[in-house]
Length: 270
Image 1 (spheres, rainbow, N blue to C red):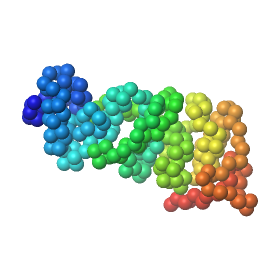
Image 2 (image 1 turned 90 degrees about the horizontal axis):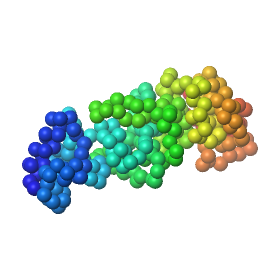
Image 3 (image 1 turned 180 degrees about the vertical axis):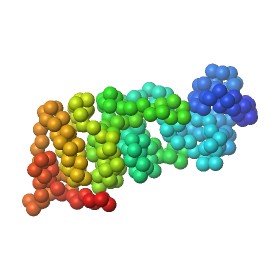
Image 4 (image 1 turned 90 degrees about the vertical axis):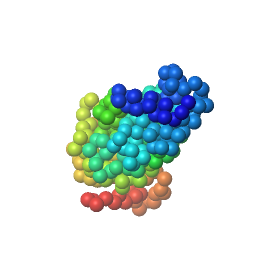
């Protein structure tokens, strides 16, 4: 099989709006006689920048607008990739924050939360895909966001906020979390419909989020969070703001959230 034969097939797929395919798709169409010849043809098209392979045996035809960049944003293919892997998922953390209105918080990685067994994070075609494992996923608090290829799952602002606190070391620390929260709060609503969301998080995560909301003077939102925590019968005990840092007897303790303030939160507006 020649690479130009495969390129013709790929071009025909693109004309029909089909940009994503697997090796099995090509074999099923009879475009290639053998797997070995197909592997060679695919490799040549990858080197020419006509297709990219963000996952083994999973290919994306590069649209014209991305040819010069030589990479395709994960939002273009993430939904199809997760279906290919048989995983439930949602775009999360800083990637979700950017999609939820925190436009200044774009990260150099594309962050995704998945269920099931761990998936190794890594750089795929110039973009780092960072996977976080969670079982089960709170899918009822995940929104569908339109993409060029259809839709992708994105955590709601409230789920994003809780995930940021839970995984603060993945996003640059608690000061970075506070900065992101300042941009997210406009669309955050801890009303009755979010009661069950708190069941997916332990009390310390809720306490730290509440403390940060008070710190950035979002007291009404913090009040609502506290009410939901009480409905979920979350028991607040004394905890360190930064779990990995030690505490001393001289450190202040927040009376509402029972947070031992063992780290100074620094943002441009505090």
